[in-house]
Image (cartoon, rainbow, N blue to C red; front, side, top):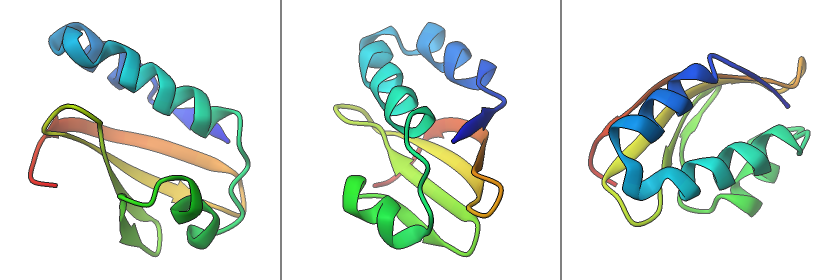
Length: 87
């Protein structure tokens, strides 16, 4: 998938250095996989939440959530924000 607003990942890595590797791993999986639908996404990220085009991904070993919008037809994921939240 193409990642839009990837600078938000870099910013979160700077603000939360203890989860740098987890964010990098999440980015790598998403950017190298063309998910066709939410079901395929759930097979890889069973702990994510969302429907339609809005999805939230818990970042392991943190209280951070990556808020995203995904267009499965276009194979594009936009990172809206990475913020503390409840899993």
